[in-house]
Image (cartoon, rainbow, N blue to C red; front, side):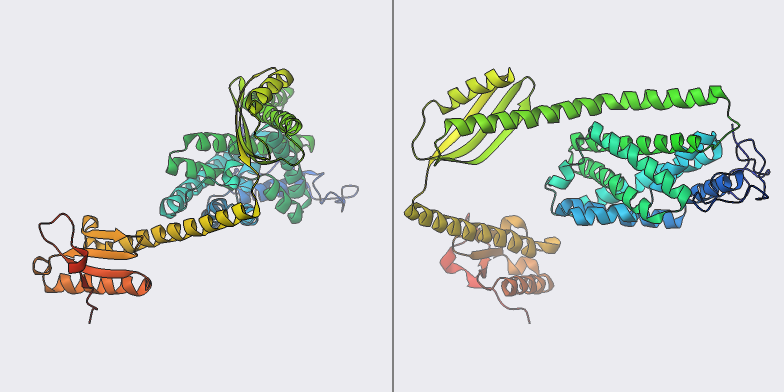
Length: 454
């Protein structure tokens, strides 16, 4: 079923009847109310539909904005920067086609629904592909808190999306652009798509599934909220009670099915929060006042509670794990597996030793990082094979096994320039040439300093 909406591209060419009622210019007793911006009459509804249809178009502007938004969101997720992720939400144009779906369902306007679905599908595909490309290029692929936050949607997210959808429709009908900014931030749409791209690019399909559920939750909740508010404001007045019943049943059934996994996730998170609170309280009661918890991890594993952590104590308690597990079983009525490592409180001398150890460890880590960078620099272009580079990180020494006669003059000169560049970038290291002989490894004393390229 399709209505007739003039001035709304793609929604038909016949005169617009605002869902069955003929459009009329404001006359005596029908002037616009400044408070509702004309939404209360047919002409006002026509303008709203025209605005919604325009925002649901698939054009170069939409593709550019979704590309920029996905780029910002992906970089923000990798940096775990909430401010950058919020910036991506503001750039995102996905609210346009989602509102188009909602208003299309409210008026049963098939052209608007099709247009919005095509635009939405294109935006999703572009956002996921852009995220995968950035993840593929990025050397950082760690799971950050911002990424993990998009993988466990709950009923709370559904509630936020529903309320956000209502606010979005109100902003469209009242032309409140500032409200739409808040809706874009509250109902995150692009960050879940970027998380899907991360999951697909890194093989973390559990992340991709969780983020897809969050995106589906936000999209359907916003669209259905838009449908309900639009019908409440008399969009599609020509629809029969049967059409209204179909809309209500469809929305209730869809959201009901969607609520099942969201409710399960919320229940699991609530169980983890309660278990963590119980474990912290019981562990604190078993420790002395001077003892302190250094770290603790509480997780739910099927019907059991798994606890592991580190505590700093003055005296070792032999039965700490057993007593804590017994108290957890009693308080939560679940099996418990506890593994607590007890460390003696450190004296000043011990702290100094630890600081020295940490400094030594940091130095070794820096040398390992330099070694990887040197290896990457020497093997660029594959003129030098990796198995021909011997690295002694402890001595900060690098030996490149070479056969200059086999290399040829041009290749040898190129390798010399590469070695000189690497030596300049790492002045604390010694980069040397070594003759390629039948020996398993070059003699360090026989190595010659790398010849600087002319």
